[in-house]
Image (cartoon, rainbow over all chains, first blue to last red):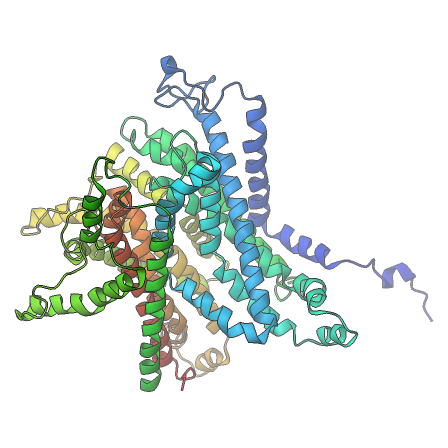
Length: 303
Length: 335
C-alpha cells in the first residue's frame, strides 16, 4: 500500500465564483474592457475634484482654443474647458446608464420571475412583453420626451426632471429581453428537485423565489445588465443628439457631440472627444458582457 | 402552413389595434395643451372653434374611433382613387397635419422614397457584406480573420450611428472632399453625371447604416454556421467524398440560412428606426426627419400616424419572419 500524501488527494474546496473568475481572466478582451470601464467611471468622478477649470465657467477671451497644456482638449465657442465638460458630461451619461439599467433590470426580472413562476400570470405577462417588443421604441422615446418634458421640469427642476424622464423612458422601453431570458430560465429551474424539496418543507413562495430561484438566474441577469448599460448610454446620447435630451447648458456626451456638429468644418476635433468617449465606454462594456457570458456559462467554463 | 398564416394575420388585427390605442392614449393622457401657445387675448369662443377645427372637440373614444377609421378605411380609399381614378374618398375628412394643413399621408408619400432608397440600399449592402464574412469566420474559427471580424463587429455594435456618421463626414467630405455631406433630394437621375452624383451622396449614409447591419448579421451568421459545422450530416457529406466547397456552401450554408433569413426579416423595422438618426446626420429629408420635425413642432396627428406606421412595419415583418421560418424549416410547422 503506497502512502500518498493526503493533501494531494483533497484539493482545497473552491467556490463557483473562483471558477467564474478564472474563466473571466482568460478572456483578455473582457478583462481589458472591465478595467477600462472602471477607469472611465473613476476618471469621470474623481478628476473634476482637483481639475482647475469649472465645466460651466465662461471665459470668452479664450474661446475656440486648440489643444494645449492648460486646456488639454481645447475650449468651446464660449471659452469653457472641453475637458472639464467631458468629465461632467461623462458623469451624467454614466449615471443615466447605470440608473436606467438598474430600472430596466428590475422591471425585466420582476416580470420574468412573475411570468415564469406563476403559471396563471405567464400568458398575460408574455403577451404584454410581445406588445412592448412590437412598439416602435425610438419614436416612442422621442414622443415621451416631447410630452412629459415640461411637466417634469416644472416639478423637479430642469436637470433632475429630464434625468428622471430619460431614466424612466429608457427603463420602460428596454426591459423585455431580460424578462424573456429570466422567464425561460425560471421555467426550467422551478421543475428541479431542490425547488420541490424546499417546497416540501413548507417554504413560502416569496422565500422560494428570493432564496432558491433568484440566485440561479443571476448569471443571465448580470449579462443583460452589461448590455443594458451599453444600450442606455447609447439611447441617452441619441436623444441628446436629436435635441430632445438634456438642456444645452447641461453637458452629456451626446449633447456635446450634438453641439460640436455645428462647428464640424472649423473644429472637427471637438466631435471626436465625446464620440470616442461614448464608443469606447460602450465597447468596453460590450467586451465585459461578452466575457461575463462566457465565464458564467458552465458549458463553456473549464474548457 | 396556410392556416397558420391566416391565423397570424387575424391575430395581427387586435395587436395593431392595441398598439394604436397605446400610442393614442400616450398622446392623450400626456399633460400639456396644444392650444397653450394661443395668446390669451383670443376670446374663449374662438378658442373653442379652433379646438373643433383641430378635431379636439369630441370626447376621447370618438376621436380614437375617427382616427382608426381615417387610417384603415379612408386612406386605402384615397390610394384606390389615386390609382384607378375612382372617387370613393371625395369630400371625406382625412388625417390633417397641423403644420401644413394638408393630409398627413401626402407628406408621408413625399418623404417615403428617400428613406426606402437609403435604408433599403444600406440593408442590402449590409447583408451582402455580412454573409460571406460570417461564413468564412465560422469556417476558419479563431483564425486571424475571425478575430478581426469579431473586433470589427464589436466596433460596429459600439459606435453609435450619430458618431460614425459624423466621423465619415469629417473624413470624406471635410478633409478629403470626396462626397457631399448633405443629401440633395431634388436631384433627378436623368444622365450619367447625375447618376454619379446620386451615387456619391448615397455612399456615406449607406455605409453608416450598413456597418450596423453587418456587425449584427455577420455574428449571427457565424454562430449559425458553427452550430451546423459539427453536425453528423456534415461528416457524412465529407465521407461521401464531396468537395469542401460543396459541403460548406451547399450543405451547411443551406441549413444555416434558416435562422439567418428570419433575422434579416426581423431587422428591417429596426433599420428604419435607426434611419431616424442617420437621416438627421446627413440631412436626408425622409420619414425619420419628418418625424423629428413633427415632434419639434408638436404636430400631434403627424407624430401619431408616423409612430403607428413604424409599429405596423414591426408587426408585418414579425409575421413575415414567422411564416418564412415555417416555410424554410419543415421541422417547424405550427399547425
